[in-house]
Image (spheres, rainbow, N blue to C red):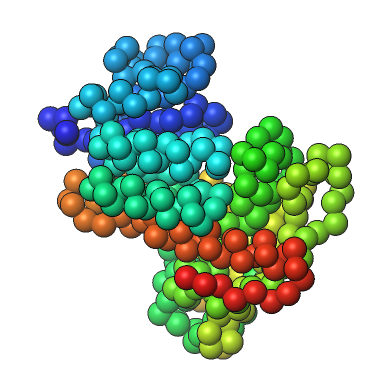
Length: 334
């Protein structure tokens, strides 16, 4: 189902700020895919997007008509950009329509949902990818290289902190978000700790931070401090917040260091290491991510950011919430 220029068509499901300000503009720069359709519950948004991006009527859907996407050969990939708790439903429906899927992180709100998503895509013979954009970002790739190759010896201590100053809407509702800061920004810390050393933690500890805005955070955590323990003595010290801006990743190895600040932003990432300042060309992270996924699909290769990676993170996050509630060290079961 490719156009003559070889590009794959992507339909964005959910036209919130991330789709509007990041994904749709990125799809104007991509080499292997293009914006082919949209799914929105807002007729006004749909009309605006249709005019702005020149979309055909038959490529515009609402949530009731979503399943009829099965009949549209222009759409090869469905990108789910909805509140976390809706990811599973729409990934499974997209797979049933025979479409490849990209799902924003976090993959799901429960391990059971994540497993169901993987199973649905596997049975349908479609690719499932998770929107881990930083796997394609040059500075984070350098952190991976330095850690994975043990350029300065094994990493002994890693610090990862990510936070926003203000959130609202569905992110404060447990039924839609699944949790608070950990699910949204803390997952970047989990991901970074894993990809710097290409390992997964064997155990975790966590402590919920004091709520500075208790009137807002009645259902989900405002902040969390947590530790990820890995084999060989490697420990990651992490923090995430919904009321404090934080953005750094720092690795200390036996014979040197490497560090990013900011580390997880959409642009402006900067880094340094024992060898000096890192210097990489700025890229559009979302364009690089979608191109890499589309290229893998076209080549019939596994996704570079597969559903299994998303499942792994949901298992770690589940262990972190158990640790936060119990105050105990919790083993992670994969």
